[in-house]
Structure formats: C-alpha cells, structure tokens
Length: 364
Image (cartoon, one colour):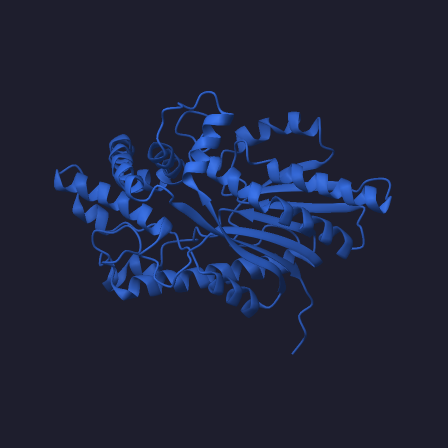
C-alpha cells in the first residue's frame, strides 16, 4: 500500500475498504461475542487484525470488537471487563509509524493494550493457543508470491501482454494461480489453527469472483485495463514489451466453493457462515465525497477507482517498471476506466465473508 497521507496514499483512497467493513460489521460483532462466550469469558482477551494497513480503517475493526466485548459483558453482568490485547499485523513495509501515532487518541476512548506484529500472515505470527478472535479484510486475495513457474523456467514470459489472468492467457496460467492460492490459503489456515484458542473465531473477507471463468468479470477486467495502459505505452516505446511480459500480479480472487473447500480440507475450523456480496465503486465515490472535504466533488468514479487501485498496487509496479512511469501509467489507466464505466456504470467489487470457529480435530 502507498504510505503517508498524500493524495495517492492508501490512507486517502481506502473508501471501498471502509464500505466493505460496514457490510461485515454485524458478522464481526457476532463472532467476537461468540468467541468470548466459547472461551469461558476470559479475563484477558487477544484480538488480531491481519493485514491492518494504516489510515482511517485500521482501528475501526478494533473499535467495533472492543464495543462488542463491552456489550456482552454488560449483558452477562460480568465485572470487571476483560483486559483486551490488540495485535495489528501487516508486512514490514507497512506504514506502521502513521498507525502507531494514532494509538494515543484511540486509547483515550478505548481501554486496551495495542502492539504491532510485522510479518507475513502466511507464516506463524503469535504463540500457540493465544488468540480469541482474528480478523482479516481485503488481504487474502493477495498471494505470497507470483507462482514460481511464471517467474522462471520454460514458462517465464509466456503470459504475453498480460499482467494477470486474461482471455488470452494460456490455460496453465489459471492453473498456476489456482494452485498458488490453494497453497497459500491452506498455509494461512494451518498457522492460525496453531494460534487460535479452541472455540475462538475468525472473520475473513477477501475479493472474489462469481463464475468459474476469471477472465470475464469484475476485478479481472479492471486489471486488464491496466495491462492495456502498459501496452499502450509499449506501442510508443515508453515501456519495453519484455518488461510487461515478465510481470504478473501476485493476486487471485477465488470462488465461494474454492474458499469453502479449502477451509473444509484443512479441517481445523468449522464454517459458521459464508456469503458473497457486492460493493459498488459509485457508492464508494459518493461516500468519499461526503466524508472528505478534500475530495473533489467533480472527480468521476473512474478517477476515484484509478486512485484506489494505484494506492493498493503502485509499489508492485514501481519495483518492476520504475517510479518515473507511474503518473503516466495511471493517467492512461484512468482514461481507459472512463470508457469502461460509460458501458458498465454499475460495476461492483465482489467479496466473500467467511466466519469460522476453531474446533477440535480428531486424532487419527
């Protein structure tokens, strides 16, 4: 994510994430209360937010979780309230400095202990059997890496003219990304199974797709327009074709069945609820204008979406193509998006929200 607080930062361009969190709020609150009751109303409760990023959304989930604990304690007439330890996780390059500066104001209204835990959630992050509730939103569709077979060997550069799965991608590209997601998500579940107390709960939200073919809908088409912007620059000699052919995004948006099957196959968590929902980009643009007086009211949905996509992915493009090309790349991308939204004004982002509970696994 783009760090800082300028116009291209994630902090200023995360309205769509805020809308998604508002949709999942009731499920998160239910899961927190259930985790509290399932684990015998602990005197010390540990909550982890994985992929917390920074900006206005970073502590929103934590605030909702603390409120839910206080509510259930009031209903149960339990005093004193449990001591709550909140652990915020993201990759080491996350803007933790900005996040930490917000702790003091947050703790004036919320009684809790807060710490940060840098590292990949595809590995262990916390001691065994210590977490009561885990949350992750808008993160698990990002893979630990581009599939190895697309980075080296005989298949390097064979996804020509694309930066992701496209209609023109060879079949092995979809197969490689699918297997990488299965490996990563399984590893994520195995690590959390070690860390979450029996009876503890997780709520996981990630970008998804509705159909089997990933090249015909939603987020895939939006990335394809970014590939078109790069190809447009290549046709003018601004970017080398070899650079485009050797670049792939570490991203995969699964179907509902793929997520269900992965959770059941790993076996440590029971699915309490799982659902798909859409959040519209036009709705995100309207909310941004309503809640941020610095957002230009005449900014189009395409412009707002382009900024949002830039805020969450620019660092990946910078590392491969160089920072000096970013303004032009995303300006062209915004122009392509204008045409896209003129044809599909109601385009939305599809998501999966899965609420799961840690269960005992029978010994074989």
